[in-house]
Length: 231
Image (cartoon, rainbow, N blue to C red; front, side, top):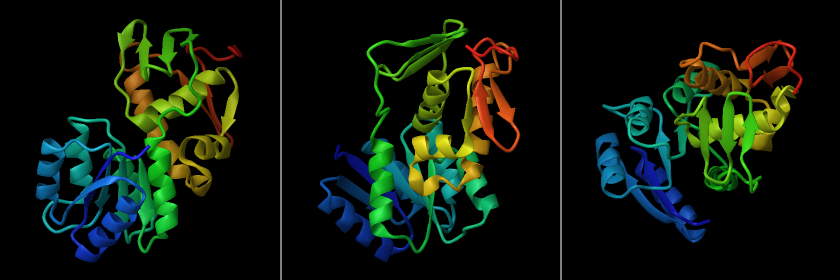
């Protein structure tokens, strides 16, 4: 699993700790203490995962996420001293895949890094065909009515799990645990943001509602876009 990781944080002690800890796990790590420098490193040395601070002088972590998302679907993990929902939602809306509050436990952070680099763990040998959709776990691709749709890694993992259980209600806890891990079981804002992103991307071309909300329970994926299809 070891690969390239870029760390962007204006606190030198944080970049030093993360470089040492990640390098000890076999990852090739590069760091930057300024957002603009980090984006240049990203361009010259494409990483497999980015860890960025949220609050930095000049360019914020949210802006870093947006800049990266214009050119890549690489997993992004945001660090921040802010622990309220609004900050998390803003970061996730900007393209982040995960959010860790400072001060953090290094073992938990390493676990999250490994989870994000572990693409589609439940691989299958054949694509899932459901209504307007073809979801190919092996190729990490999705088409809606024959048109390829670009998804970030976490968007894809969420849709893949919903597609595997098409027509059935998937609870918030099950989705959070499956896609983000047990440590995120109580982070409902993750689902609200990512389901919203999926809806925009999947329904833009057809106007159909493929992901239905079951209030206080979870979400149901209905491939054909009409209620009552228990597939």
